[in-house]
Image (tube, rainbow, N blue to C red):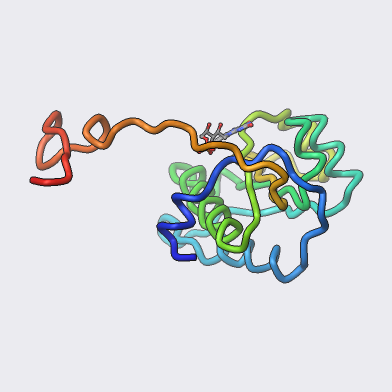
Length: 170
Ligand SMILES: Cc1cc2nc3c(=O)[nH]c(=O)nc-3n(C[C@H](O)[C@H](O)[C@H](O)COP(=O)(O)O)c2cc1C
C-alpha cells in the first residue's frame, strides 16, 4: 500500500477485534515514529507502548472505553523543556507516521486526545515533568466506518495569495 492509498483508506477505528498483535508489527510501527523528523532534530517524543491487558483496561477507564479492546495503546509524551515550542508538533508527526504504518499493515488506529492525564501517568509510573500529548489505540478493526467529511480544497488551500481558492485545473 503506498502512502497516499494508506492516507485515503485510514479511518478512526473505535471497534477492535481484540486479536493479539505481533511483536514485529508493533515494533515496525514504533520504528516509524522513531524515524520521524523533529525540530532541530531534538527528538523530544517518548512512547510508552502498553501491552499489559490490565493496564489497557485501566487506561480505557481513564479515557475512552473502546480502548479496552485495542491490541496496544501507545502513550505519546515529552518533557516540554526538551523542545518548548515544538514538542507537540514533533509528537504529532511521529504519531502520524505510526498511524500510516499501522494502516499499511492492515491495522486500525484511533488518536485519543480525551484522557485524564494524571490518571494515565499514575497507571504507567510516568514522572511529573513529562506531558502526555496524545494516545493511540491500535488493533485489528472489527468495523471500518464510512469516511468522515472533509472541507473542499478551495476552502482550505489558496494559490499564491490568501483567499484565492485552489482549484485543480488552473
Ligand atoms: C488530536 C486528535 C485527538 C483526537 N481525540 C479523539 C478522542 O479523544 N476520542 C476519539 O474517539 N477520537 C479522537 N480523535 C479522532 C477524530 O475524532 C477523527 O480523526 C475525526 O473525527 C475524523 O475522522 P477519521 O479519523 O475517521 O477520518 C482525535 C483525533 C485527533 C487528530
